[in-house]
Length: 305
View 1 (tube, rainbow, N blue to C red):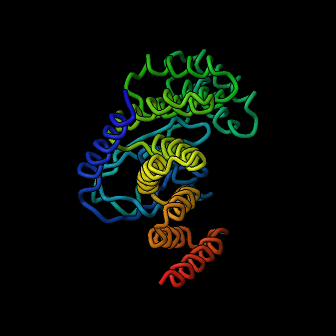
View 2: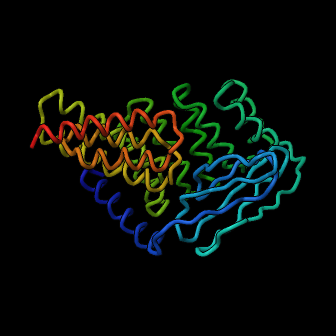
C-alpha cells in the first residue's frame, strides 16, 4: 500500500467516525459506581480509577453509543453499553473470581510498567492457563516491545487467531514495528488498526502522528520543504483526531500539536490548542507552560503586524 493510499484510508475512516459516532454533538458527564480502586475504560480509553467509595466522575464524554469497561483486582471484568442519552450515575456490578488466569493477568497489568520481567512471566502464565486469552497476548506483546521482536509479533499473531478483527492488537503491532524502525510496517499496522476501529483508534493515530512528525523533521533537515509541509500537515491531522478521541486524557498530545502549529507558522492554531489544554486540564502542573507559550505567540503575532 503506497503512502497516498494509506492517507486516503485514514481520512475515509475519520469521515466515517465523525458521521457515525459524533453526529449528535455535545458532551456529557457520568459517574461510574462500582468496586473501589477499579479501572474504568470508555471505548478502550482509560478514564481513571474509582475512589475508595467506588466512584469515578467522567467528563468530556461524547454523546453517542459507547462501551464502558471496568476491572478490579479479584473480580471478573465487566462491560456494558452506555447509551447516547445516558448520564448521571452508571452502576457496573463486578463479580469475584478465583480464575487463576484472570488473576495472573491482573497482576501482570499492575506490574507492566514497574517490573517487566515479572509481568512477562505472569502474562505467559495467563495464556498457558487460558490459551484463548486474547487480552493477555496483547499485554504480553506490549511489555515485549523493544525487548524481543519475534516473541512480541508472535503474541500479536496469537491474539489475532483468537480475535481476527482486533484494533488494539493492530495498534500494538504498529508500536512494535516502530520500536524496530520498521516504519512502513508500522504505518500498515496503524492503518489497519484505524480501519478495524472504523476510524476510532487513538493509539494508532498517535503512532502515525509521531511517525509523520519525525518524517517532517528529517525533511526539514534535508531542505525538502514540500515534504516537510506535507508531513507536518499529516502529523497535525493525526494528533488532532487522537486528542478528540482521547477526550482530555493525554495532555502531551496538546503540546505535540502546538509545536507542529508553531513550526508551520500557524500561531493562531497553536494558541487555540494551548487554550484548549488549559480548559481541559485546569489544575495541571503544565498550565503555566501553556500560558507562557500563549503570551509568547501573541507577542510574535503583534510584531508581525
